[in-house]
Length: 539
Image (cartoon, rainbow, N blue to C red; front, side, top):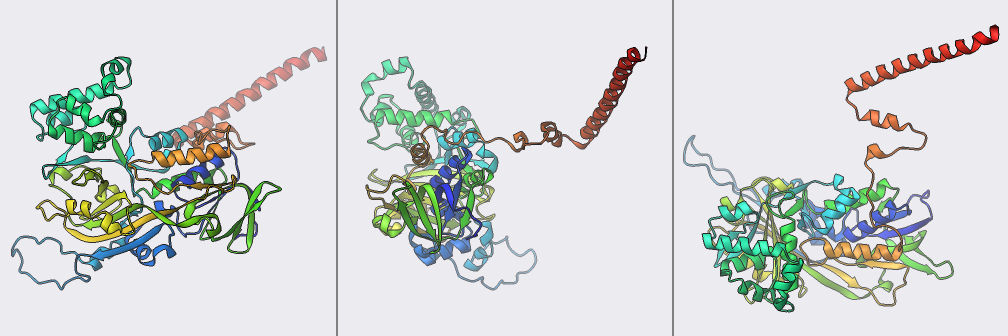
């Protein structure tokens, strides 16, 4: 660590995962001095993205590389090396399907961005609103999700989202289209006085009961429950309506569906917040091990030992539980998410179901008993996360055990079921995302961030970051808007010079001529004024 590094900070943040990066950016933005440290040599922690070679190394090395990643394994379902090419006569036969091997896939390793914790963003959700209001959105690019799938009677259906989708779909009858439009129109009025009067009888009852009362068909029921409201049979009426309304309010903002996905993967999101922190003076140190965290009771400060020798003091520390020293955390790590990443040479479903330029499709899977669910995200090369002609599938569910493959077995069977439209599997990998539970007697100067939650968007993780920030700085705003570069005026600089920088060259030349002419006019006016003052004195 650099000997010139300051020894005191307002805040030290350990770990560069999403909630830690949010807090670091928010503190730096309001003028606090921030030191942001990560024991890893990369940004993101359990929220990071890797190329294929690095991802395989991560799974092989286990928690020696990333403490949050456990129970990792991967397997190839194709030959390890390319087979010798057979020479064929010109024009002989039809073009053959590309034969993949582990060797040929690994040659494209750098074109993969394998997310440890992928998420889908609601277009009007908490994260999108935060990115816009804080002006962090300038650091990222996004793709609209092409389609939302659901399963019905063994078939894969594309859920109609917009009004045009509803009337153009061939999966619904005329009657079903009218019923669906009527239901969605009613949901948009949820929260208004008239709705409250008409629907008072459903308060406290399951959302499913309300759907049945609307006399929707089983197919529409499945579309709403699985893909629009994303609920189960026990979801209360109020929650189901809120989720449906959230879905509808996100429609039409950035694409045909209410969802967007970060270009190049979700590992970009924590880095966006890290960039803002650095812009406002945050200092970053990667690959630095935290040897100890010590309290100074008299000064009401806390200090850390870095690499066993350097000491840095701060008023507060924010840290992911996995990066806490052993003496401050309790028990063994707890698995929060069971994850799988698959590579396939074909998408899920027909070619028609996979048309679109966004490169992202979404499917919510339910077990046969309706008790458990998983989220499947399918990515093509348009998303910037996989090479052309290959698809990446992300499968996520809540962890039940130390065996992620077992936790996900029911869902993988639904995807790779040997049906004609099932993807052609090339590679599979499994791992758990874990964290530690913190003891209740932890010092109020040390704040632990939560491990990734099982959720589609980032709502709970943002709430976790907001909660920590409000404890640190009660009266300060969480991530106020950051100015654009052209809005920043450095002390002693002429603001006009900054605006001139934005002009095209021809307009700059015209502006200089006008300023030169104005200067000459000022000189003439001054000479005339001096002459007028001198005449009376001579007389």
